[in-house]
Length: 572
Image 1 (spheres, rainbow, N blue to C red):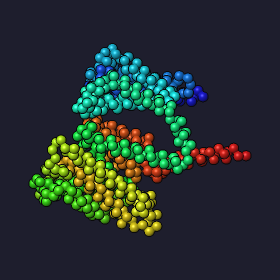
Image 2: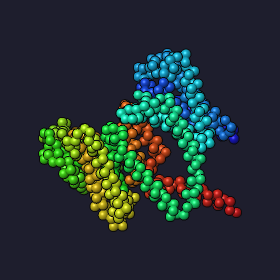
Image 3: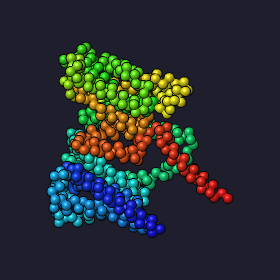
Image 4: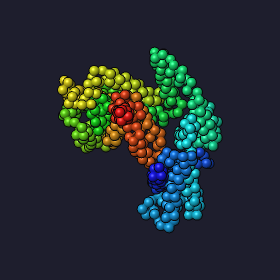
């Protein structure tokens, strides 16, 4: 028993050391210093200090979960974790006061030490240690709270951080209407006002408390309903939710301005490409790292057929050019697919990567410059509906916003029908085991080629809409990172899941676009989110039932086998 207690305290100390490393990383990469000028709550706390506060609370919470059982020990464990984190920050300040660390660590500056000690310098070494212990203890206290109190506390903190980050984004459109007084009351130019923070905390925590107390009776009443009634209620709830979501989406560009329209249109374009790659990778299991090639084909086709500038060849309308873009992208899918679809696994991924890079290099080369413009690109691509006055409801990016949403909904419907068809089941059979599928009579090359061509068609449609959104096409826009983004949103949303494609695009494309002010560190958070996702929820946020079952099959089988083993041992 004593040995186990010491092991538990050792785990707490290790978590404290890890928390110290995280805090040092936040400081030495410049996150704390850069964001110290950006208030989260005006006049109270900056975003830089918020990062350290969150690090202390989270590591304290984790440390409390590893502390030995006993009254007060989890809170003590959280406080110990926070103290160790604070000691490591104090050591940084102490060493930095004696040695010039900036020759190696550029952000280890006197300004950083002043932030960590609240302008007290080396004399304030006690500040990070005391605050670390307090924050770690608070994280431990949150851990020991009963679930009905813990959830509101966590959601309240999350709401403060979320609204503080989006304060300027929400405040600007409110100032132009009748809500300008409320906007100034709740939001500062950057961050929440103290009154706004208090109101947010009260509303979120109060709402969660009311929900937790009201939920069990409602859940019992629903569970008592017969199965057909429960199914009918569920369909009604889904229908109401979809209707409300559609109304919000339709009102969004007029409520929040053209920037949001452009961001949502970009998300919808990635949804189109994600649905295409979901057929190729999610259904048929063909990893395509050159998916941007078909996006480029669709964009350049629309550019060449509609541009009124130097390289335009037909000056067609956008509506006449889009079908050609889809068909030509599908033809390129067939052309690229035939030579390589006999390859499997990693070799297929490398081959498709090569095709994507070939298209990008050719588009920007001098060889095709007389046709595609080379580095100069194709300019003056007209909007789908050209010549609208600024006050028109469809002026600016709004028309691409609505067009992208309609195309995404149409492609999602087609993808759902394909998934539930005989062809979709054949793709999934190939994904699970090509040899078995071939033994059952499936023509592998023909079936893979269909998946490749349909995925290419959807990507070409996305490229066509992108050309209309931006109004110009350059080879530099067709980078490998576009393909990586599409693969990543499939992984985050859930492989083979059509709703997962939408969720993945929102998280990986929409949110980074809204956080353009943090552009230097966007990919740092992007990578951290991907790592956390793979560790905590490898099946994705909204996975398909099949993928979820596959990834959790081992865990589901272990519990019965352990029970059987106990039963066998107890049998005389």
